[in-house]
Length: 318
Image (cartoon, rainbow, N blue to C red; front, side, top):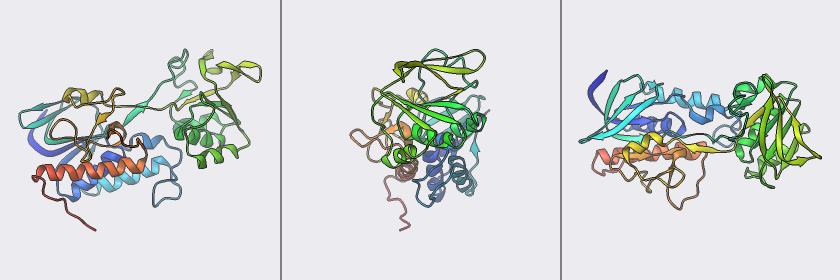
C-alpha cells in the first residue's frame, strides 16, 4: 500500500532519541510518523536506570513506557514495523516497510540506535536462548539460584551483574581489561556484593554444554582452571550502530558505522538528520546515555522545524 500524502517528517527509531524527537515535533506542529520495531529501544533491556533526571531509580522498561505514553499523548501512533528500504526521490524521501507499505516525507530523522555486539565465540549462537542472553531484565528470573557469567566491563555489563546478583547464586564478571570502563559509582556498588566474583584481564573463548549452557572456557587460567561451571552467559560487550538502512541515503559515516552529524544534527544529505546512539559529531565526547539520546532527539526535531521553515527560529518555551 502506498500513501499519496507527504508528511513533514518520518522518524526511524522509537528509542529515547526517536521518542523525544516525536514529542518535540508534535509540539512544533510538525506532522510526522514514527517507526520502531521495539518501542523504547535498548533502554527496555536496562534492569535499572539511576541517572535520568526526575527518577532516583526506575526500570528501563518503565522509563520506556513513560516515553511512549508521552509521545502518544499527542495523537501520534508508533508503527511497530521493520523498515525495509529508504531512498530519496525528487524533493522527498520514501520509506518502505517490510510489509511493503510506502510512506513519504520531506525530512527524515535517523534514530535507529544500536544492536548488541556479539562475542563471536563457539557456542554463542548454538546456546542463544538456552543460557546465552543479551537481556538481563528479560531473562534474569530464569537463573534464580544458578551460577552465571557476565562478559564485559562497561556500564551495561556492571549494571547487568548487579541485577543478576539479586537472582543468581553466583555471578562472575569477565572483562578483558584490568580496569572497568563503567562509572566508578557503579563499580563500587558491584564490589559491595558478596556473590559477585571478578575475573579481570581474561576473555571467554568458548561456551559449552549439551542441550543448555554448562560451562565457559577462559583464555587464561582463573584459580588454576580455564573451565568455569555456569548455567548462563550474559553478553554485554558493547553496541554496533544500526546504520545499515541509512547506507541507501549515502550519508557520511565513520569507519565504525556511526553517522557523522554536524552541530545542528544534520547529516551530509540535505533533509536527513540523525540522533542518539548511531549519531556522532566528529571530535565530540561519545557519551551514549539515555539523557544524551533524548537531548539529541529534541535538537533533531528543532533542526527539522528550522529546515521546513527556512531557518526560522524554533519556538522557545523558556
